[in-house]
Length: 218
Image (cartoon, rainbow, N blue to C red; front, side, top):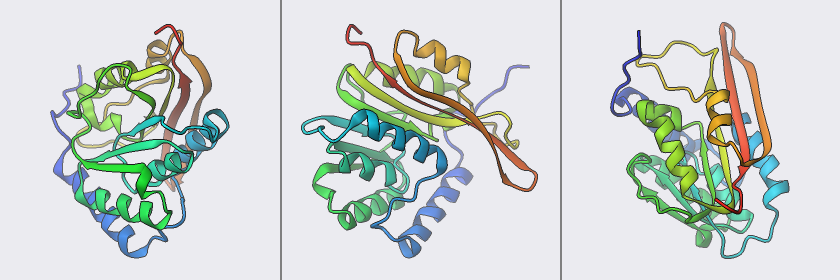
């Protein structure tokens, strides 16, 4: 039987993230960049690809969360647009940018990652890590829209869950390794990996991530 996904992220998910970001506002050292290991894998590899000469280049990060990825890209020299639907995330990202002295390089927008307007070939880098799966039926179509919005020669930074994963209600829409390979056919794949981790006893989760470069002729 085909899964039926909700049309928007459930409130219980949003409340959980909101609680986390509000907690981080009080407890996190904002001048540090401690990413989740998937974010770390994507960003550390990106450092060697993207380098430091990124003046006047534009990056977009969807679901910026705690602002770590956005600030990292800003430190690499990009002019970053960081988007999140939660005001707590927007506040946290702005404060982190201030603490790291990159606030002049980051524009933080409170908005829906599914509805944010995208123009074709408008960004040098788009980052979507641990977020598209929560768009459910829109996860894969939105990914293709993101790919279209990347300039020729630009980069797509992606990370997300795959099976195994604990059951969620409603079930999230995993983008599989096969779907990533199909979507990025013809792109230069700099890093593509799948890994399983035991997050806690009885909770083993799968992760996939990719750093891919768009062909100059697309």
